[in-house]
Image (cartoon, rainbow, N blue to C red; front, side, top):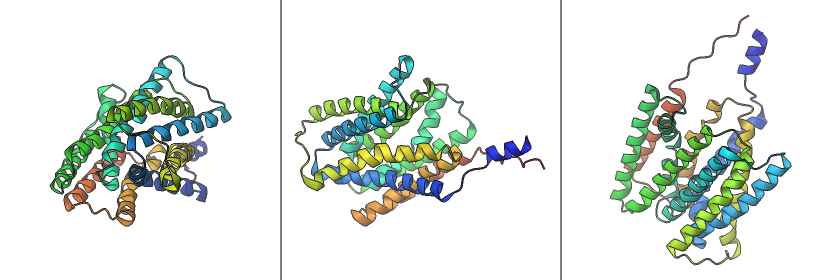
Length: 305
C-alpha cells in the first residue's frame, strides 16, 4: 500500500513531459504576438471569426477520433456559455484591444485568470475562498492597477486596456461555470464552444463595421492558421496530456512563464517597450499568481518505509 501511495504521488519527469510543458508555454506565450500580427493584415474580430471556425472543425475531428460526443443537458448549456463568453466576447475584446495594447501587456493581464477564477469559484460556491486566495487577489489586482497607470501615462487608450482585462475576466468566469457542470470531453467543449464563439465574433465584426474579405497571402493567413492549429488544438492537446503525467499544480507553473515569454517576444519581434510601472505591475501580478498557486500547498508526507 505504501509503495502504491508513493507511486501515485510521483510524476513522470521524462524528456517527453518536459517537451510538452515547453511546447505549451511557447505556443500560448506566442499567441498574443500572433494576434497582434493578425490585426495588421485582417480586421481583428473578423480574423478571430475565421480562426474559431477553423478551430471548431479541427476540434470536431479530434473529438470523433478520440470517441467523444457533443454534450447534452446542463453540460451543453455550460458549453454554450463557455463558447459565448470565453471564445466569443473574450476574443472580441482581446482582438479589438490588441490593436493598441502591446502583446506583452495583454499577456500579463491574462495572467490574472488564476486569481479571478479563485474569486469567481467562491462567488459561485465551487470552492470556498481562503485567506491565501484573498491575499493573491489583492496582490495581483494591485498589479493590474499599476499596469493601467503606467500604460495610461504612455498614452495607451483606456477603453482598449479595459477591454483586454474584461475579456480575461469573462474567460475566467466561464471556466468556473464549466467546472460547475457535469464533466465532458475537452475536444467536444472546444469544438462546440469555438462554433458558438465564431458566431459571437461574427456579430461583433458586424457591429464594428469591419470589412469581411478573406485574408490575402501568407501575411493574412499565417496568424490565423497558427492560432487555430497550434493555439486551439496543439497547446490544448499537449496540456491535456501533461496533466495526466504531472500534478495540476506543477503544470500550472505555465501561468507564470507564459506572460514572461510574451513580454520577451513582444520586445524582440515588435520592439515593444512597456513603461517601468507596467513591469512593476507585471511583477505584482506574477507574485499574486504564485501565492495563489503555491501559498496554500502543504508538503507531501514522506512515504512509509
